[in-house]
Length: 342
Image (cartoon, rainbow, N blue to C red; front, side, top):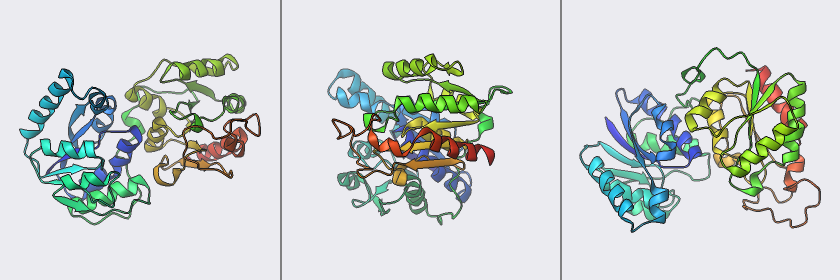
């Protein structure tokens, strides 16, 4: 059986899809998936044994230049590529209008979430088969339910299996003990205070670990260097690709993350991980893993789900103030416990 899967972004969403593919591979011997995904995340589907072909797209870029010659050419190439392959099922797991449109490019029965379940209800109009999945549960559960219905097997009761292992990313016999700080995130309201990273670096160094840190943009790189300037145990790495970050995490003793895509990657690899959530909640999209701990701020307005903190004059020096309930000592205690039982 050959399935075309459309799940283009984001990093967390793509990683949340992997356990459903593992379920399907156990239930349907010989099943294979071709996966349409944003080019920046194309490495991730390749890691799973059930994925035969990865089809990179640039929807984010195309959407900004909808009528450009480059966009038209890219869409033509994608259409020609998909139409030449007969699929048993074309499954849109994104549930957006833009992803639903792509199902028309392929040869096969179009399927996806129904109008009550999709993130954009209008997307359901494109599908020939529609499936209802309760929105108010973790994204991993939603994707496992969707695939079990669309492909006709009983939903497994086992814990999610991402189909990844640390060994597949190991590049050598790493003996260095280090913790990875995953401090970069898009929303200002999700950023754990820089002073807390400095304090945590002190604690981690005293515990006998080195710290490795990187950044995905100029602001994050600058913050990484500020943290390193105060601690000789901190090593600043260049900007890393998704695959390079997987190698770094695979050999780490543990990681601390904000609500960010690389936190999901750490969880999927099964390393000891503590993720901190202030403005957002881990309830539906938290970093999941066998050694993953999600800590939520216990504050009057949390989770506010706002990109910027509403406090123009914070009640304390810590900004956002909700993170005062998640100090470095609390984070380290949770990570230390996860490392002990790893």
